[in-house]
Length: 356
Image 1: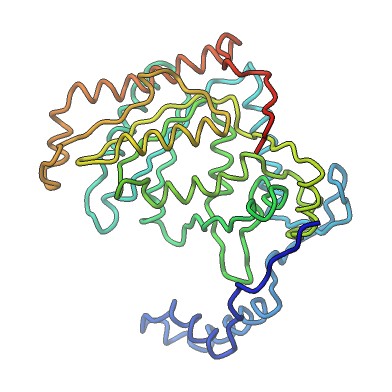
Image 2: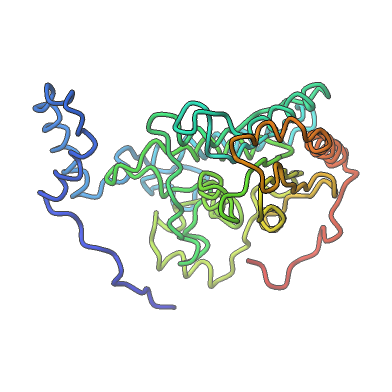
């Protein structure tokens, strides 16, 4: 058995530090009239933090789990059951084809930038094209993280690097009520991915990389690639048990494999090709199927031109607009072939000698 390495975690806040941290969220003078009520809430929050009450609502896991007596979080169980149902519907050949469009840009006109993103406009072109083709289209707009009250994608904690079975599917790191790490959007986002037959990501380049909302989602999808669907096998986050499971032999299940994908990556100076390649590598690692060369698009809009006129540059880029629509058409065609059993990867059925 490997050893568990310890010694990095900071000390917990003391009572006074906790009070100061808690109160920063209520600096608006308008909260002064409810100061006594806030003090009561703060005391309860302190007690939860001090006792590390991550999941305050639990009950025995019951049948179907390795340890039916283990106290499983009600919130995790609800997400788990929705994903099982979504997977059943997605795999039913009689259900309509469902395509998920993901807008990866962080900006929208409801917050500081004061203007919609170009990615949003491209997402709308895809929606119109696919709906005209009779597809069931759903949009995941990640810019809501910057403009919607108390909505979060909390960061991945890297459980997988301790041992793959410690990374639960869906993620059980959140919500963590003791740390006030709540209102985590990923429970809904997992369901959107599982429900989809095809996925198209539309994103700009931010400093040669994916925008932070998109990257947060990507990191939290690690549990979809090899994640453990039964937290009772590790009794929550027991590192020793997870390491023992992996060393015995872990199957690394690919929970999203077999879905088609497409990409639209755009920039104004540099980085579009490398980001498109990074996203393709990630999606194919998870077992998603590329929809052809025209479904993997990287382009520059307003190359080295002013930011102020970037939307006008997009207006003029009529060939690019049609290329974006072709991404949607290609993904829709790939999904039809996948669902008809006509599109297969060349490595289908091969067992990787080094799974991970």
